[in-house]
Amino acid sequence: MFKKILFATTSSDVCNDAADVAFELAKKDNAKLYIFHVLGFPTRGFGAFVVDFKTGEQEYYSQEYVDKVKAEIEKTYADQLKGLDNYVIETRAGVPHTEIMRLARKEEIDLIVMGAHAKAKGALSYRGIVGSTMQGVSLKARCPVMIVSRPVPKEKMGFANIVFGTDFSKASDTAFDFAYNTAKQLGSKLYLFHALDISPLPGNMIGRQEEIEKRLEEVKQKINDKYVSNMEGFDNYEVKTWEGIPYMEIVKFARRREADLIVMAHHSKEKDPEKALLGSTVEQVVLRAGCPVVSVSHPERIAETDD
Image 1 (cartoon, rainbow, N blue to C red):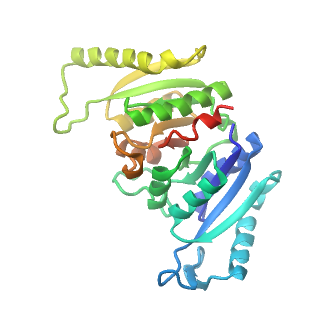
Image 2: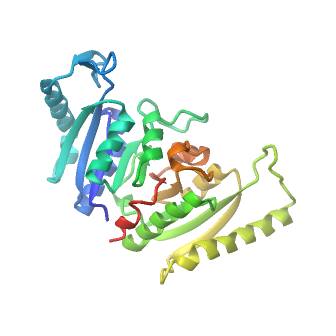
Image 3: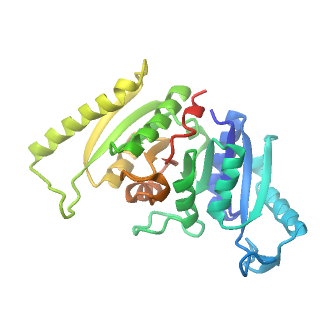
């Protein structure tokens, strides 16, 4: 399915879960794997020193140091590299999300795999905890970005159950394309899901249960008209709608269906993807989901996975 996968790593323990997924997907798809670590922005502008990824100390930026870091990365992932021949280890100095995107565009990467945060894991409840590097990558990426914040058993990496969460935005159309193409190719069951927002927020009118149920039926019809009508000959799907706080309902639904993958749009508002922040719903899903979450921002490379 994927020909080129980029695994963005800090070579720390918090990247281990994402590493396992990236290496396993590369082996399953016989894809070329790019293991990429950004050394950090050189001190004093573009000076001669960088901050070492393990010690936190300043190191002289030289070819000798780069070779040392690459050797350390290869040692870190020695077990996962067994049986994988088609890979390269890359390191660069710079702003992490900028360098990740530069390499992804240069090599025409099909999928970026990364962890949710460089320092903390777990379902923390406030905005902004998702790492700035992940924010920057998922914002700019021309390909889907798979965010892994929990261990994923190998048997779940076939993505037999895929949940596509939609808010009917234009950005969600691109996410649907990826979810649908993936389900077709892998023979997965596709769940098309929308959570009717009845959270107690200003301007969010919560009607009687009869009104909520009527709106849920309208949403189901909208899913059928917008998405199901475009799934030619594909019948391994279910349409579901729940009411509640969207990120909570998506996470609960995914757990009940034993989802292996959640696919969502990077952002929901109708704006230029280059200027949109990671939406609060997908951010909270990333931090709480028991499976990887794919954030989709741009449509350019989605069709290329449908080979």
